[in-house]
Length: 98
Image (cartoon, rainbow, N blue to C red; front, side, top):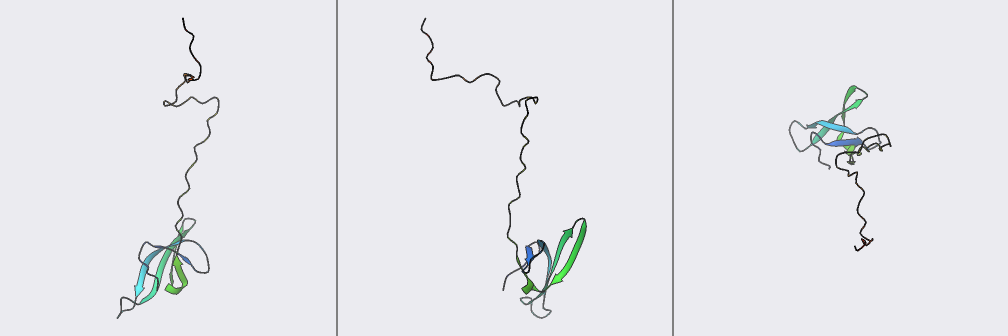
């Protein structure tokens, strides 16, 4: 039997949104016997809260958050402080001997 705790991310086995486990309900006489899982999630700005049988949900796969891409610089934008405006020296050319 899967182990669930408050804060776990779960999804219905049949599909749907990723939900957060709010509360794990157990049998009044046996704390090791799960009777249900109260899950919460948002639909837009509305908070939804529903109790599911523990056999209907499974742990969700964690996905790393997407990194925000920096916008490309255009010709009119100033260069940042860490970029040098001087041309880089060329090491393959020999300097003339005087």
